[in-house]
Each structure stands twice: as structure tokens, then as C-alpha cells.
Length: 64
Image (cartoon, rainbow, N blue to C red; front, top):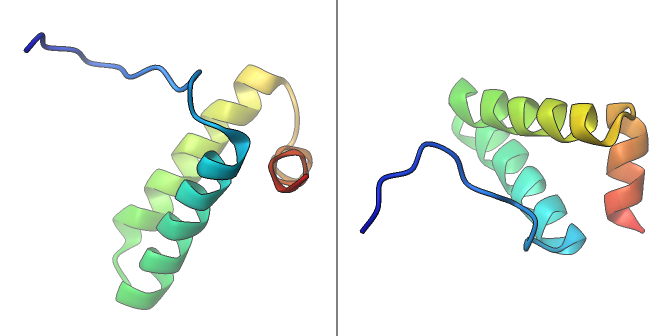
């Protein structure tokens, strides 16, 4: 197995990405483990930067 530092998300569907973000938020809120919320926010920030849009607009896009 090759070592890698980054993973491409180009093959993840909008629906799956939304589910991942929602799962991280749900888990963070219900376990009180801040790392889950932090990871969700970091992923969302990176995606918004790539899409050159706000978090609200990006989440609406994923929900369509």
C-alpha cells in the first residue's frame, strides 16, 4: 500500500458529502467531542474555498 498525505474527493457524490458533514456535526453535538465539529468545519471551509462560495451557499448546493 502506498503512503499518501491527501485524499481526492472528486469521486464523492454531493449526497455523500452532505451526509459526511451532517454525520460529523451530529456526532460532535451528541458526544461533546469538539474534534468532530472542528473536522466538519475544516472540510466545509476547504470546499467553500475551492468552490469560491460561502458556507451557506455551498450547503444549499449540496442539499439540491
